[in-house]
Length: 138
Length: 290
Image (cartoon, each protein chain N blue to C red):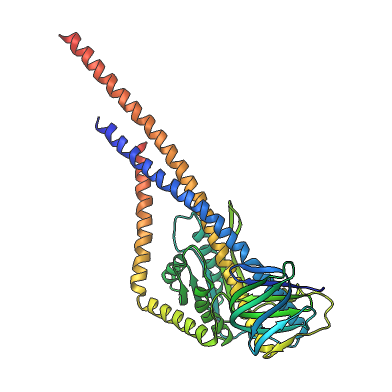
């Protein structure tokens, strides 16, 4: 019997890799069930569980994904899983947050520059002390 | 014995420093292994994305993503600068920041503006110091990079590119080659070069995917993830470089401290002996005088 090669990978690690008889996952437009020799398909998936029926021992594996992208080939399934729950609004919120933090940093730039200056001065002093110590030793 | 006591104090303080650097070396050695594993674990994802994107661009040769737009007219260049949060890791940050400065100088002499995203505290401080416009930053990443923390700052830069505020985006980080060798890299991230993606596609290609909801949305989502994966990979490599560079630096520091201690011990023993000899000769001289 034909099997599917299933790969579930996220940016941080490879979550699952193996042969399967059947895979079910939450597609954007509804639950998808994929059997071997499925026509090529590519879609976004919603946060949810991916059910994998293993080919070797017939056991079911559940992998939770926080959304991502699914690619189906006749002989294999690739799930590019997101490690974080994504969504346009959420991404937008993160971007605004990052922007705000940068703006605030510019506002407080004085203190940052002071800190940076202090750090470089400190490094210079440390180098001077080391040099003096070396000279004294002679 | 004033000099002797002073030297003894110095030896003590060097011994303490040596203990600290030794401990840091061992901590970095164990963190380095984990950081390298994480770096390798991130590879399958970007490879998979690249092969899918290759298939997609073969199937839709006419489609051009906003990330592939060439020849912007804004005159500004974006930099994503990946550095460490902490110091004491040899010349790692200095090297990457030097390459960044060179590249920035090139851009500025050509009359361009600079916008930067800083990942890592050292680069953030540096960019503020040189007066670059930092539009977003991510600091305090810890030992384990999370894509969660990178999405926001990266999106700010990607949006700036898509809106045409910057013409090109460069990614600057330290590439991990091996434990002893790390290399600063400044590479072009955007506009994405179509060749790099298409190069990995298989030659025979006479099928297309079914798209849900539609091709453009899926391709864009994929490319966004691809870019994020590249940046994540660079952060992971930077962290592996950080730990191995720190390990090497601390090993050198420990060895130097050991050398200094043995030198100081020699001086200490010499002065001790000299003072004993002096005392003896004084006693002998005293006895002779009586």
